[in-house]
Length: 118
Length: 133
Length: 112
Image (tube, rainbow over all chains, first blue to last red; front, side, top):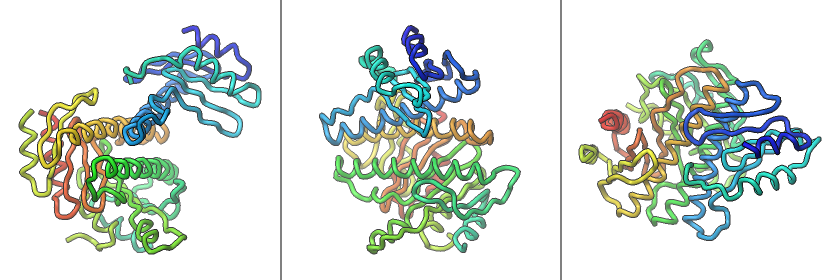
């Protein structure tokens, strides 16, 4: 998938890949072991299910919240950030790269992805 | 800690623990250290803290949408795994809130083996009724 | 799966619903409007997936066997409790309902 290649070309990106909404399939490129990429795909799937559930609840209570359907999510730690949009994840060393640039790139490529498969 | 010792007397009790709202493990008891350890309990505590927050959000939303009552506040959340279940309660905290106290006690949890798990007895203990008959 | 209706015969069970793997409502019985049953089924479907994510990650991070695959969940409120097993969800009275028995019955019926 070209977005994965594009992400890997960005400064600070350690790894990027795809995870499946159902089942255990995943693919990745970058400085991650197969096992760690598998773990990342499990975590991404779980968190994406959660954010979709929460935003659907919010939309049911307050229609037009602007948060539904969610496009993705970002978790920022002291030195690393995980950016997820649709079924693509990106692990970034944000001391060497820009979260804004990564999110912009992901939104351009994936922002209109359907969430019907979730 | 009386409540933890009481929880450990439940059928199938593997571990009993207290944890902060932010998930950190506090006091705990473990019956079988070769099966479950404090690191696992800490992770479980963080997971249950998140699940309790989600369940609370759901309960509040549900009552608002349906006008049904009796779901909020959430008293216990239970995850039934393949072999183990974990039951956690924030009821002591809710009672403190209702009494207007600002300093809240921790959450309480117990891990039970499914084949002998008595959920009703666990709920009764966590709700302060003493061991169920 | 009208056999799920038998769950209503248990003390304290007020509603029982069955949903598809994609969360679509199949049928429901008890003291609740159809619209609310559809909402309950959607909620239970989301919870089922949330619990699956919990169990997967718990197993992954701890290496401890016995969490996955998960069997169900219970959210207990002051007056009402909701419990889910498989593609079934029940709403029961928190006081007096024999939850242990209800869970066993849910587990059996969910395999039909």
